[in-house]
Image (tube, rainbow, N blue to C red; front, side, top):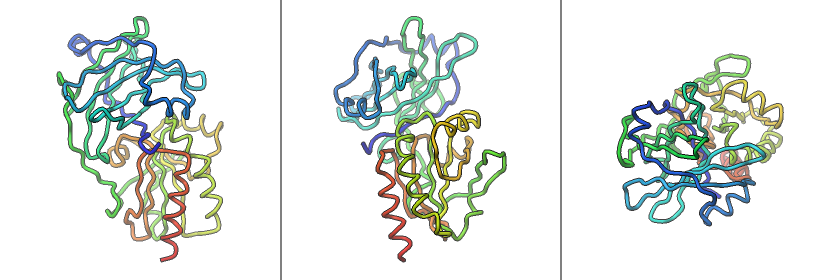
Length: 291
């Protein structure tokens, strides 16, 4: 499923005044039949949903709750002209003042050149969903389409970037100059990201004798969460973490895979995750190495 993209970016919780001004819906059991394949592929169960009114005829959004491997989570879909364009599994963070779960979710589309944003608060005691559309970080009564700049794009020079190793060292992408750098931008809570890992590991094994190729994973996670996951799942890429500055460059969707050539230019770029993405990356590496 090429359209599978995990979106996770928190810009703060709703204030009490914003909750009062927000629209309200209630989760009910079920899900749209169009996501049946995704549900089965990601082994999801106990799905519920609510429609979020966008105020735009061509765009519709559904938000819901799910269970995956015994853990509760959330899903959200974006529909354009009644066609499924995006399926994401965002997280909501618990608010210490009220115990409600809240987050801001960016839904990107049109090759990540546009987005709509919504603040969502879930009250588990009532199953009510409070939602408020956001336009340039300001509340809005309806969804507003915002244009997005794309600093990371095939054919562009890769921007200056620093990431953090698990040992706390700062690593500049420039330190891998004159090599092919294969980057995976991911998050431990992203189902499609996790599906990619076994295939990505085969790439590391295949090219381990080639000093021209480096494999770098950049997780948008806290160290504790990343280390916990890596204890459960082997991931052979060099492991690093990205902060908010890195997220602004890559965008707020996971996973993304990039190949930077020895001159620092982006030679390959893909969005969304599926288990055979490693084959596309391998084909591109073979093509580049033959030049």
